[in-house]
Image 1 (cartoon, rainbow, N blue to C red):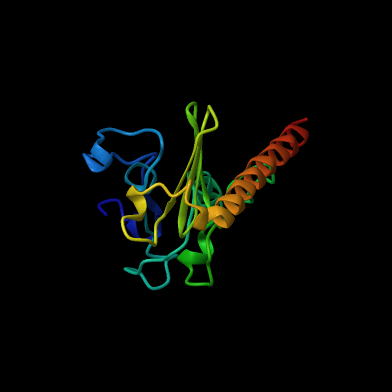
Image 2 (cartoon, rainbow, N blue to C red):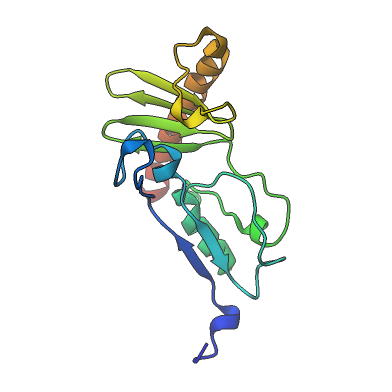
Amino acid sequence: DELGLAENTLVIFTSDHGEYLGEHLRYGKGWPGHDASSRVPFIVRWPEGVDGPGRTVEGIVEAVDLVPTILECADVQVPPHLLGESVRPALAGREFEGRESALLETHLGTAIRTDRYRYAIDGDGEESLFDLDADFGAYRDVADDPDYGVALGELRHHLLDRLVGLNIDSERKREWRS
């Protein structure tokens, strides 16, 4: 404000992870990436570029979406090898659906979070599935419930699609650099 830059400066507040803070009887961060540690704020202040400030935009985004967003907001061409997707349409008040899922990866396992489910698979192959729309959804593993067999299969497939897509994108990135 003192330098007169506030009106045309993009400020983004976000985090790499949240903290459990006692939820799920845990503290700190970590696996299996429940919402307490995986959902983080993505708050933008940009007086020149945000249409309808003060609103909440629904839609899943990932940390990899940050760099393409900053580049696009600065009118810098987004290199084709970047894995993220700009959220500038959401800032500009245009239609924005976000991603179908968020991918979480650690040395202990991989998880995927959609609007309704969180699916995780440990390094030893043990799976968990949480229906976030159900009663006690984030606390009740339904992976062994036959009523969720179709959802479990779809999420396994979706996770594989995401991981294969990352490998394809990584290959494109190597090609782009050479």
